[in-house]
Amino acid sequence: MSAEKMLAVSPAPHINAQADTAFYMKRVCLALLPAQIWAVYIFGSRALAASAVSVISCVGFEWIFRRMLGRPQTVGDWSAVVTGLILAMSLPAGLPVYMIVTGAFAAIVVTKQLFGGIGQNFANPALVGRTVLFFSFQNEMQRFIVTPRMSQIMINAAGGPGVMLSADAVSGATPLVLFSNARTLPSNTEMFLGLINGSMGEISALALLIGGIYLCARKIISPVIPLSYTLTVMAVALFWGFDPVFHLCAGGVMLAAFFMATDYTTSPMLRSGKLIYGIGCGLLTMYFRVYTSFPEGISTAMLFMNALTPQIDRLTVRIRLKRLAKRRDV
Image (cartoon, rainbow, N blue to C red; front, side, top):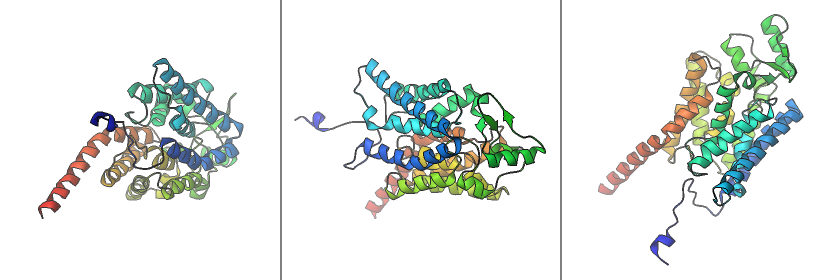
């Protein structure tokens, strides 16, 4: 056997373990289960239907695209399923089907398959899908089914009827929108448990925390990025005089910290790089939340850090090599 045949060259992620990609992706699906169950409990069958459409669309687009180009099928590695679930978790439960399909197309075909498939995407596919939908359908992406508790909070904040009825759903502002407009906010306990309205996978910090702890305990992800990200968000909020727990539980910080920022392909390799990456995500998230017109800011922050990941890797690898060279000299 020649040396070239013995050397297998493949794109990231490179994991030195007996388990394959499907093993890790299935564990991520399992970690998302608490948030999915809670979303169905709060929003009903719409949440389950939206998740099913997202997953089926992502798997279908990957299968069709690779079939058209004559490439080996990769739907069995479960990465498309994970993308579909995370995309669904970042969307309102009442979003129309054709919009979910559009987001799945942007995630799988444009972001992942056009660049060569898993390991070669320039950004987190679900994140790009969500961003495309946000800028394409801003009104629909900001219409959320209101929970009974949030309905009362909005009524109190507005001094009268604070919800709007439509043919599709009851919709209203999320806690971050209320925060940006300096209105009455839900309690931290209500946000932690998931009694608020918002995207399906963002409402319950507790459900996401359970899934995140599971991933860290099983060593599917490193805790460096989630910890550096969430602690930076809390530290910056405290520095600016805001409630750090509110900014941790409101919006998609917990979803992003455990399930988006930790993407193997678009996050740095070394621990020092992961630390820089997590801090950068936290700083940018708070900047966009406070100083821009967008109440969330996570998507923009993470896309910016995804673009910086290759540079972070080069910097941290170079520093490590210099340290190793110094040790050898000593």
